Length: 254
Image (cartoon, rainbow, N blue to C red; front, side, top):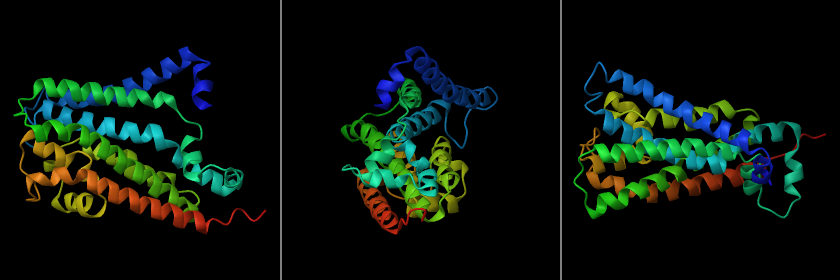
C-alpha cells in the first residue's frame, strides 16, 4: 500500500531518493578530501576505507529499508494506537516494520553498492573462493545484525516509551562507526562491538579477511566466516526480546 502511495508521485519519489543517495555520497566525499593531505588513515588506503564504507552502507540500507520504521513504535505505545494492530490477523512485527514503508531509502543501498563496487575495482585482492563468497555473506549478515538492532530498539520502547534516539545511536551510529578502519579506535571499543554488540561482524571482521589485514584483537582470520552464525544468533535474541516486550505491553489504560 505504501509503495503504491509513493508511486503516485514518482517525480517526488525520485527527487527524495536521489537526495538520500547524494547525502550519503557527499559524506564519503568528505573522507576522500582528507586523503588529499594523507596517504592512509589508520594504515588503510582510500580504496580500503571505501570498501568498509560501501559494505556498511549497503548492509545498513537493506535493514533500514525493511525495518527502519520500527523506530516509530514508541509513538504507537504512547498513544495506544498499537492496539489497532493487535486485533489484525497479521504478525505485529511485520505490521510495525511495514508502517509508512519508505521506498526512498533505496538511495542509501544504491550508494553503498556503487561505492563497494568502485572499491573492488581499485583493490588488489588475492581472490579465493572463500573471499568471493564472503563478500555477499558479509552484506546479508550485516543487514540481519542491523535489523536485529532495530528490533531490539523497538522492544526496549515497550518499557521506555520514547527511546528512538537510543536505538538510533546503535543503528545509525553503528553504521558510521563501521565506515572507518578498526585500527583508529581503542581496543576496549573493539572488544565491545565484537563480544557485546556484534557490530564488528557486519563488516570489520569479514573485511579484514578479504583485505588480508591482521585483526587488531589478535583473532584468527577465519572469524569473519562466523558472521552468518552470529547474525542468526543475534536475530534470535532480538526475537526473544520482542516477544518479551510485546507481552509486557499494557496499552494506555484509556
